[in-house]
Length: 270
Image (tube, rainbow, N blue to C red; front, side, top):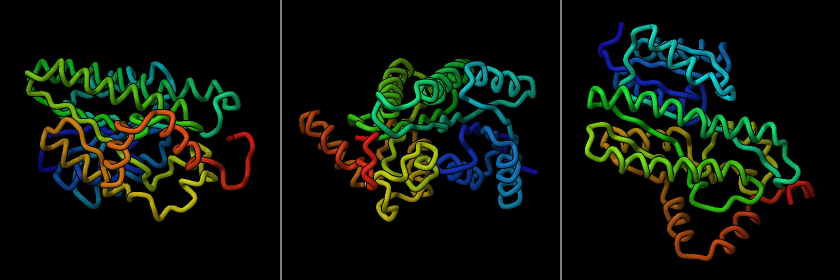
């Protein structure tokens, strides 16, 4: 069915940037393993990719909020005999509101998804790739990891971890043929904001200022294939990150806070 033996594993592959990355790989005739929670969405996505690109798509329905889930995914793939040539860590969520009012259980789930799952998949597949001395890893961070994040404190914190973690393991593996790329999107038109209960925020109320997920995915895919260490998707996001490195943190925090304020006057998010 497929014309290549190479396989990419993508978490969060049924929507947003992950789905668009799946398209990028499929266009280049990579077989895919996509992981998400919703079995129906996985099945539909697999059918679309198979019909459009003539590739093999394996689906694994797992809730990556669960601590053991990434290990279970790895073991299932291992048992199938499939080799993962490219790992894409994309699945991530956030929660909107002041830290004193948000749900700690949900935040612990977010930490597990945004950090825990990334760690497990990256470690296990990095070990395999280093043993073969070839492979590629894409970690989807965010410009949020470069900025303070009032009203999204935990999400920004998790992405700061991802960005820092990626830089560290890049240095550790600089003499290897395994390449590790960090993709930093900004505001992107995905379902992230609905899941984070953030649609009432000023900075997402007008979606025309958001980058299309397909554009972000193409930037990430191009950088990954070129073996680049880091790509900030979008000119204005590059400007914002550059400014954050120059301006005082307090000023940046106040600016982000103002832009993230609710449009309906909701006091709980102030």
